[in-house]
Image (cartoon, rainbow, N blue to C red; front, side, top):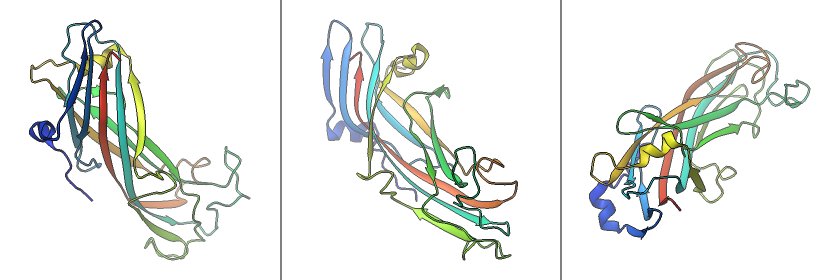
Length: 230
């Protein structure tokens, strides 16, 4: 699933980074795109874009980000009842049990520090299919099992990319956008965590009611614009 997109410093200069600066409040705006490597749980991605270099205090960072997610998982109902998506079996939400696929991204800067800022995450409820009673074979196929490979969930992302505008104002996070090593750029590692939660009574009716395997995801993240002190 891995596809290398990261252009690096030289390529970013080749595509042309437009810069707009304001003197009074240290305003700096950089138009990308700044394209990261695809990120997955077994192969973290990386993204770089221009750092804040003005002398005025940095009080806000506004990022325009495009992201896309592909994912895959295998599930098998291991109980003799067809509980999946069954309205007669209610959970705390008043609906049939609907296990869901979760994928979260986490940022770490060049110093290895966690940065909880603008990375996306999703929770996809698996309500578009049902599983029958276990057939006695853990093969993730048949009426009781299923293998899902979703390179593009049109319901989740009808335009392929989801665009978000994120404002960062937390002082401890803002410090990660300042140019500290003099190269004019900041680099973040994109780490990924995936899961299918199996909490008895909430996500599944009882413990060991569902077998899950091969939970993977593939994230594409593009920073379209970086605005410092907008």
